[in-house]
Image (cartoon, rainbow, N blue to C red; front, side, top):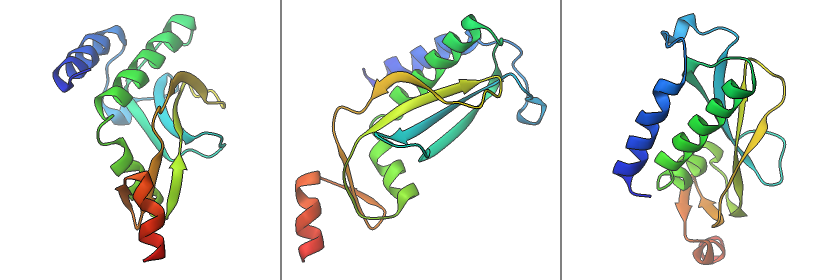
Length: 137
């Protein structure tokens, strides 16, 4: 999906949320997105959206759509963002996008997972085949 298409998708989904408010007014109905390693239990990156959703199945579905659209919109930058955040050497990392709404305690998978592994060295994304040669040199 091209960047322009991702942006249009995100803009199309934003009106689906209700109670658009300023960040400081967001309370229990917020939608949050996160990237988790697969397998893993601790998020790498979390982002709380500035939009509220209803606390029902429809709101959860809208939150899921927003998290997928957000992830798709930064797909090309994701390895760089993840490597900067982790700031360690890592090879063949697979990640998945999760969501939660209405201050639920558990993150729920959106079903979106990386198809290509991510490799990092000194906070920078590298091609996975090159990761071991960097370490050895």
